Amino acid sequence: MTYWLSFFFFLDDYFSALSVGNTMRPITDKFGVSRDKLALVLSFVCVPLTIIFPISTWTIFYGTQIAAIKGGVMDSTGHAITSPIEVFMHTIPYNFQLGFP
Figure (cartoon, rainbow, N blue to C red):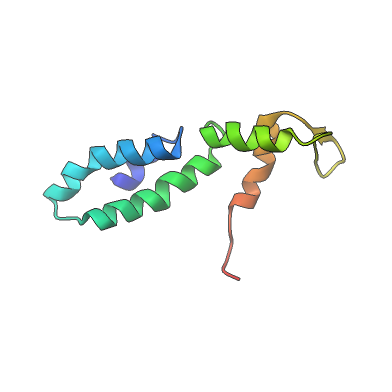
């Protein structure tokens, strides 16, 4: 249930972990799930989801930092991207790691 609840609070990584953690703590305590396991699920689900979704504080931060580069960022067709959200959308594939080195 913690895993699925994390999908609904993805605006900020800290907000997501705090809200889902405080909501699920009484339930996991009732069923004997350790708080270490709850923290592990939160850290593996909340933060990665926040980085992937385009409506989050990560979009604002990384998008504006990358778009602030003089001249914008070039895409594969040679077009300069200056919109922070568009820049962030182009970085999403780099957030996935397909295997271990």
